[in-house]
Image 1: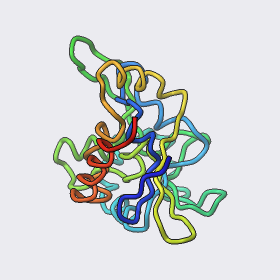
Image 2: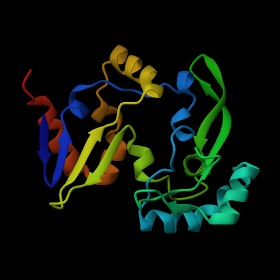
Image 3: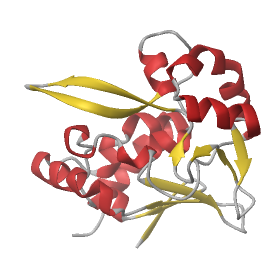
Length: 199
């Protein structure tokens, strides 16, 4: 089922399925698995280049060498602009840190270097919207409308379990990036649509 909010077509499972990232279990593996970098816009490429010096020392030496050789982004096989990757999978902007979470320390958790710097108030830009929205993926249709769908990936199975245990729907978990991408008014309309979905 598809729900249309403004000029955005929304797959209804975004409104009905539960999801809540469980970093203690997955350790941010979505940043290092896959065969291409994260999709970015030209504007985001400018932000990456503007803030690169602030995070470069947090990146691995292989990542720094990739950036020096080919830059921070490339066009993938579909011609889409994506972040550069290391060894055919890891995003060059990944970094690793032990995180204190509730009653445990999560060792060697993968984080986005830009988001970490942003949360420390070292920079004013967080990270590409495609990363913030995951596991929602966005595409532009031939008629000019935008479509967003729930991308199911086995590495996120613990997030599904946690979301179900806590009763958090995917659109609720991703409230902040959805508002960042589409605006508060659009998100409010999405919430109304979610409450009005047929059982």
